[in-house]
Image 1 (cartoon, rainbow, N blue to C red):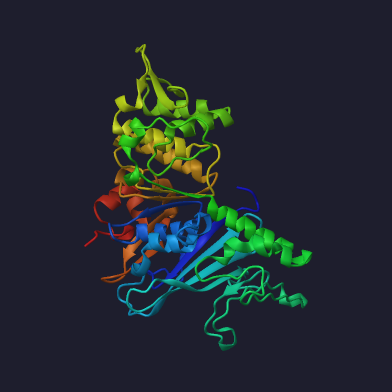
Image 2: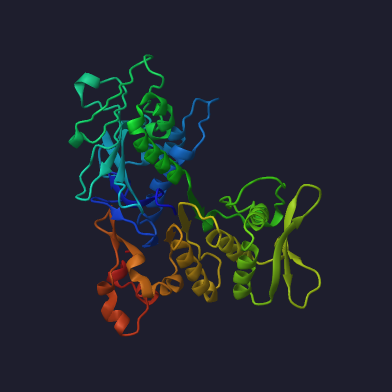
Length: 437
């Protein structure tokens, strides 16, 4: 990641489903989520998907649906409110971002979503983007606020505010009202994605702030989500994607595997060797894996093995073999996304492959930010040497879960006795979340 690329430092929620994340859960480059079913792991990941879909989603102009509305529906629509909270109420999602450049302040994007009474659609009530100084207080370098109904003078209007550092006495404000502006922000979309629309309306001295926000948008667009439960082995085995597509990341179903390998092998001279070497560690009899033309404009994959003249094809391979190939393609890719989220990668894999899978995960986290959710004690064993990267979803009461990052002190006594992290998970040790009941 470059110095101007953002990483997600913290996620804070309020009144959101079953998660109690206030003052927030801090995220590092490597994050391993563990906890019982229904503890909120998927809900946290859904909050990340929501922002990605708001920014990267394509509005359905024909139906008059915006990216925010599509993302809201995927998040759960009217079901996003904590079940113990009475409507009407506000659901808060706050995303704090930082960069490797210490001179650039962290950014805090805060969304307040209004859940009305009955089955009325959830709407965005307020959106702010602030600098966060070292002491954790919002700054004034770049800020916008939309649809702030608590201010009587602006009630019913939408406006954007861009401010420079007040400490040097420079403040600039833009107000958008009705048809008197080039662009009128709406509660049905994020103003964050409209930064480019404002660029020609502000003076040159404020362009750096806009550029940083564009970098933030680019970062969120680059987030990638992969859920092993959603992989379609049938589609992968039967699919022969068309030549010419430029995809370098797997679709959730995995059906574009052959095309992704074709593109990665073509664009990165060393990746074919890296992938084949990795798969030889998984299945030592492997000689070579390669995408080939099948028909005039189609692709398939050949898997050559030692001692066999004819290659195998995907429809002849085991489900686990295809799953591990997809994971290798995703985790070892030379151009990783700005955030890579993989849910339950261990599904369908032999326990003997867990050390290799963990090695790939750790390797990817050295290049980008990675979130893994898992129920596998065998995979968790492989992170015994890095327990500080494990986040436990712990039950607070009958309806709510919080998230706590493990420390070596939490499990030091057990590790001294020879336990591994997965062992503690197997027996329901309270230090790693305990049993789910």
